[in-house]
Amino acid sequence: MNRKARRERALAQSHLFRRYGKGRWIRPQKFASSARAQEQLEAAQATQQQTAAAWDLDAPQMAGGPSMSRDSQAQLLTLARPSLPIRALNSLSYGITPTSLSEFNGLGSNDAQRLQNYIDWQLDWSAIDDSAVEARLSAAGYTTLGKPLTQLWAEHVVPDPAYEVRMRPAWEIQRGAFVRATYSKRQLREVMVNFWHDHFNVTASDFAAGPVYVHYDRDVLRKSAFGNFRTLLEDVACSPSMLFYLDNVSNTRSGPNENWARELLELHTLGAGNYLGFTDPFLVPPDPQDPAYPSGYTDIDVYETASAFTGWSMKNAHWQYPNDNDGTFVYRQAWHDAGPKFVLGRLLNPEQPAMKDGRDVLDRLASHPAVARFVCAKLVRRFVSDTPPPELVASAAAVFRQHWQSPNQIEHVLRHILNSSAFANAWGQKNRRPFEAVVAAMRAAGSDWTLRVAQSRSDDFMYRFGFTGHAPYEWPAPNGYPDTGLAWSGASTYATTWKMLNWLTETNDGGVPLLPVLQLSRAEVSSWTAPNLVDYWCRRLLGYLPDASRRQTLIAFMAQNGDPATYVITDTDAWSGNDLKRHYNQQRLRSMVSLVLMTPEFLSR
Image 1 (tube, helix red, strand yellow):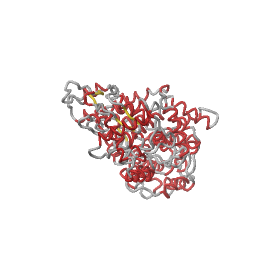
Image 2 (spheres, one colour):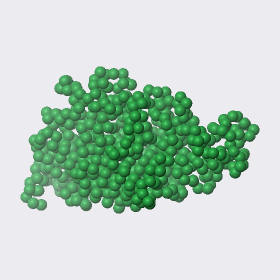
Image 3 (tube, helix red, strand yellow):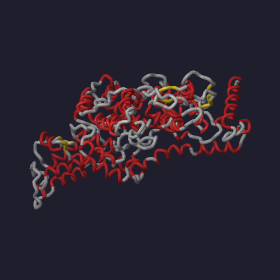
Image 4 (cartoon, helix red, strand yellow):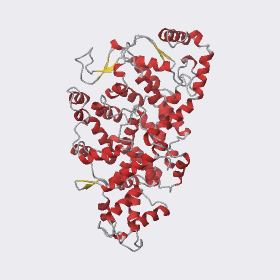
């Protein structure tokens, strides 16, 4: 250790003793040699991996009740393997449509070339004309999506309006999520916006965050969906939704609040698996990939990070600043703890310029090798498998760090993951979560119906969908919706998702079917035999025919007591209880489509 490093270490130890010495901190020269501290560190390190594994498996139990076993999950891997275009579109988008398959297949002379060109096309999202979905939202009466932050604040907060006025921005974002995921041509961007909402979770129905949720979705997460993680971190930290949600709006030197700091380290960057508890930060070993960084973080890092972000607040008519009330971010120097800080092995000097303490912490995190591994593992989990291949996570993390200062850093990382052989070969290693399943059904079945706000059928849709436990941006905890099959494989989740899918096939809104089952069958199936109808809808919804056993089950259901090979089903919904092949035929057709939507083939990706 050179002289400068020794001096910085001594200053840091002195600072920590002064700050924590009377309570939780032991005098540094004693602490450094404390056997108890060493044991504490070793115990924390021994449980790091267990904590990381448990983090993804504990929260899901809230999402869907009892989870299926690992053996049951493994059985999904035996499903018939669809072609690469179908596999790719089910992960890069919210599911296949006849149009998206045609677009994909027109992008090259072989599947590998088509996949690479499709990825390039989707990553260049601003060049994709998406005016149709914006027109759809406008025609459906979405009035808040274009309002700037100050207008949202002035119209939905300052007047203390009725609840439905206050929360309309959040409701429009939630319902608009279905509309965009179903109809947007920028499909990969919509998938990534959803990913970042889960990663930087803010509950949309939060009374304080909801009125400005449009700003959080549009100006923070959408803006940087393919951009730079460091930029995204600061935009999140400065957003009123997050300032309210994790209480940094009131984090001051006289009244510190560690909520934002703890979740920043635990959920947004380093991950719970790198948490070492109340451990001497000077005993934390260096990261194996880069010794300039510690391998984990301690409670002291949390406290010091909270101190670094004191004064990061907003203009919300605080009693000390009653005339500041436009909802924008503000840095209040008078609220900031200007003393020295020791965060993640780095000493921050006292009396730094405005916001520099917090920005130094964000720089340290954005360049940290453990942060790269944590974020990339989540990306690989989203696109490839519930058990991310370690070699792909490692190579993606290297790209993440290489480009950590690039404006399109996330684009580089995604291009690396999505062009990997692991992605190209993946199938059956992910389950569709309820939102993904419902949107995929609407896309594949050619829905032309738009969710609205304060409209009875749309309200019914949202009410019913809420029982699945996956309403957009409604996860109540800061860790966001879980992203593993085990999380969403409980009996209650499957039952409510199946009920929702069945309801879609049965329901219309003023004569507009939510899923146009009869209309498409009439237009595209010339002879209504049971095999013709089953094959058409399997190809339409799945992109291929399922195994012979499942296909025959569907055919038998559709044919009833008729000869599947010869009997032509009439287009009627008449009652014929004594002859089941003529009994409620239209209803039976819709039910058969529902059964296809409930198959493992449809619910896997």
